[in-house]
Image (cartoon, rainbow, N blue to C red; front, top):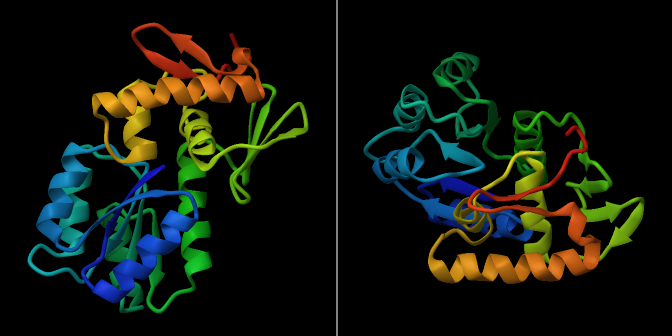
Length: 221
């Protein structure tokens, strides 16, 4: 899943980017508010991790701009201060969760995954769509309770579709979430990825909707 990381401190940002990448996220890291505001307005992200203490345009202004512009992806706010009044201001500006520095990296990742699950309507770390079950904590998949060995990219593909069960997701949108870009090479790679994935989990579990993209059938139709 593609995540926008907004953090101006080089050491903190590098640690966050590495940890999020290790946890299976595709991370785009920026260090100033103006660039963050632009990217959040123009690109598709599954979530954002946003530091409030940014140079130039501050984090609260960035967040307000996103929300006023109709951007609804979940935002986990980071701050060096733990003042409850600032938390209230951040939440009223549109923050979905709040984490004060210093924090444990495992907690940040767990909270971020929790936000993304809730946005998708999933209340636990296990997501079930028809015969397919994803364990979002261990990043593994099961079909009819049979464990399926997947590559990181194959798992990311399923997780992207699992956030919109029963609805087609466009190829370019999938490519942006799992690769960070959506050029023609990425879309060709998605087709090859789907071919490999279907051999592992069964062709009927990943449907193609011509002109619309791919979906995980949720069994409701």
